[in-house]
Length: 219
Length: 190
Image (cartoon, rainbow over the protein chains, first blue to last red):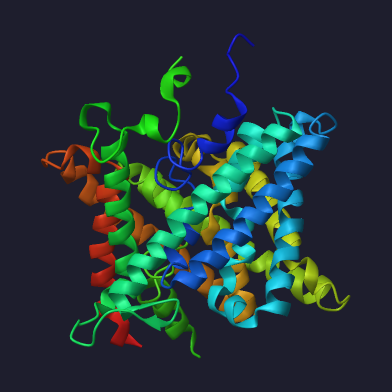
C-alpha cells in the first residue's frame, strides 16, 4: 500500500462536497428523488440513512477481519438490513406520520447503493475511527442535499417551509415541483451546478480549497 | 381490481422509474445504448417476476404463520440476493449468448431498488399470487419502456451541444423530468 492515507479531517469533509454521494458519485438517487417533496421528509430520510450508514460502518469495520471475502457482500446486506429494520420500527412507533409519508422508502434504505458502497469501498478496509468519520461525512453530505432539494421543492411547490407559509399569496405555486417531474428537474440542475463548481477551468462561486485543504488530494 | 387494471397501472400510469423513483441507478447508468437498455430491462423483468412469486410464498407460508413479519426486510433482501445468483448461474448454464449479453448487469440487479420496492409494494397492496405476477411483469415492462425511451434520446443527444457540465447525469435527470411530465398525461387512463 504505497498510497498515502488522507488526514482524518479529510475523511470527514470529503463526503460533504468533493465526493458528495448524491451530486458527484450519483449514489442513492431513488430516495433522494422520492422523498424530497417536503423539507421534513428530507430531514427524516437523511437522518435515517445517516443512522444506518453509521451503525453498519462501525459494525463492519469492527468485524472486517472475520468476514470471509467470498460472502462479504451478503454479510454487509444482512448487517444493513438489521439496522434498517431498527429504523423502520423506530419511526413507525415514534413518528407515524413521517413513517407513512416515506412509505416503502424506509425499508428500501437496505438497497441504497450509498450504504453498501461505503461498506465495500471504505469500512471493510479501514479502522473504526476512520469508518465513523467517513460514514458521518457521507451521511451528512447525503442529508444536506436532501434537505436543500426539499427546501427548493417545498418553497416553489407549496410556498411553505416546514409547513409554515413563507411566500406571499400573490406567488402562484408551481405544483409541478412537488410532483415527480419537479424532483428530476431540480436534481438535474443541482448535478449540473456541482459539476460546474468541480471543474478546475470554471471555478465559480467558491474556490474548492475553501471546503477542503486541497493540496494533498491530487496525489 | 382486474388484472388488466393492475397491468396498465404498474406499467404506464404509475411507471416504476418515472413516477415512483424506483430503479433510478440503472436508469442513469445503463441508458447510454438502446441494446444494453433492452438487455437490462429484460433481466430486471425476469428477476422481478421470480421475486414476486418467491416473496409471496415466503411471506404467506413462513413469515405470517410464524409471526415473523418483523424480518420482512431482511428475508426479502436475502431472497433477492440469492435469486439473482441463482438466475445468473442458470442463464450461464442454459444460454451462453444471453449470459454474455447481460454481462455485469445481472449481479447489479441485487441492489436495484425496483426489485425490493416491487416485493414490498406487492405486500402493502396485499396482492395474491397471480395478481403479484401480473404486477411484476407490468412493472418490469414499464421499467424496460422507460429505459429504452431514455436510451433512444441519449443516443440522439450525443450530437447535441449540451452545456459541458450538464453532460451525463445532469441532462439525463432533466430529460427524465420531461418524460415524467409526459407520463403524468396517462393519469386519467384508469
